[in-house]
View: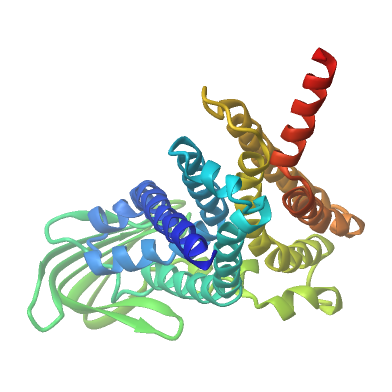
Length: 376
């Protein structure tokens, strides 16, 4: 029996890896399109682009793993039926529960791995992603101005740099500053350097002219300088974004009710996220058993198992949709939190009950006896 379980488990695990990596590759490609602008417009290095997109993978894997496992288990057990291997196993007395052990073991293994991903991998990845995102938007060491091109910033400042020097400085700087509504400032300098101060990104100008014109009375002022520095980032981006829900550990999320700094909406969102980190990994076990239960307890059909497979897919879709609906409702009322657990636990116990106490050969034999009795 162990040899058969290892045989089935190996096929399920290989299928799960192939499906997971295929889906992750496709989603990585779609997600990476949002970050292409960082490389094309800001000249960021490719390694930073790859690092930022890879930090999104733990979150995506957490969503995809139950679906990928469901598809892998469904494919493997259906192939075992079509190749008559499962029919032989049932004929020699192997029960549906024994045949389902391989799917159960793989489901438990992936559930344990998902617990690690949700409570350690995702918070660290989200925290690192937030830090990189802040550095790109606010740190001049990550923001590279292209030579001979005008770069327009979000706060109404346009910067032109003629050339990047080998020592890190720049030459031929032109800055048009319209961040103040009533005043337009123009700065030109022979050389300069991009620096990062405590108050935010700044440009240090060397040997240049500062011209200022008032839009109200059109007064014009000119200043010649040998050294001059100016801040050119908006104050809103100088501070790091507050810690998000995904960056917190499970203990912080579950104890959010005692956090006076959180609003009622944020508190509910944190509590719901904490409970989802407990129950979501077990959907791997549920979907693994759900995918094989219908195939193991049904009678063999030479025309295929299309109806059973369609029914299992509908059940999986209904459970996933119900989980999303309940999650949204729990965000409005925490009294509905038990429904999150019932949506997973009840179908799980139904699958276990059917696998343990429903024997397709027994019922098929009793049905055949009834048909013969009626004929006699």
